[in-house]
Image (spheres, rainbow, N blue to C red):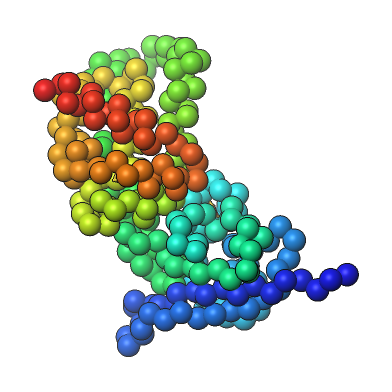
Amino acid sequence: MSSPRKLKLNVLRYDPRKEGDEPRMVTYELDEAPSMTIFIALNEIRRKQDSSLKFDFVCRAGICGSCGMVINGRPDLACRTLTSQFEDGEITLLPLPAFELIGDLSVDTGKFMRAMSERVESWIHDEEAERRELTVLEEPMDPDTADRIYELDRCIECGCCISACGTARMRPAFLGAAGFMRVARFEADPRDKRTAEGWYDLLGDDDGIFGCMSLMGCEDHCPKDLPHQNRIAYMRRKLVQSR
Ligand code: SF4
Ligand code: SF4
Ligand code: FES
């Protein structure tokens, strides 16, 4: 049996809360295992070489959105990225930019996503429903509409689209593609009674949809393949027509 390939992982190490600590790259070497993901490799390093290495994960299945990081220059999920796809076995890992760094590869996407949710008022707006008696039966939704909403509601808040976005990097108040996708989800929902004018008030400026430069880093790097290009273009047209 041939011996396993050696992997070389160059990892940014930095603890912003530790006085005097400086960002630095640390290289770890380990044997590659069959079907190894970046997440498994990092876990191996933490278990056998350096228990202080910080990175996030929960589901290990591309569902929770915790393990986003920059992998050889591209924002992606560590748990869904196989080490075998890197031909020379050398992999450089950096934390996602545009989010507050907790330490090493761990960033706080939660604060950003919570602010985004509040900003786009991420709930069904229907004044009539608020007055309706609780005993009134829910209205059925036609399956095609439910499918359309489900498609747009698959964002796992991993932050890859925000880290891949030039505008988000330059303009900290920019809502970003995850926010536009959240808007698309509610805009497609017939129970939400917000009008184009209402959406304009939330998104109609340079920190919203008109600040987007349409270079589509979000579409290229979204691990859930959400239709960013299509939805951003649609929403921008809708807002322009509302004036
Ligand atoms: S298309 Fe817009 S939202 Fe997407 S990465 Fe580019 S500037 Fe950001
Ligand atoms: S839109 Fe895609 S890339 Fe952006 S946070 Fe959601 S799943 Fe991640
Ligand atoms: S660990 Fe949950 S998406 Fe990677």
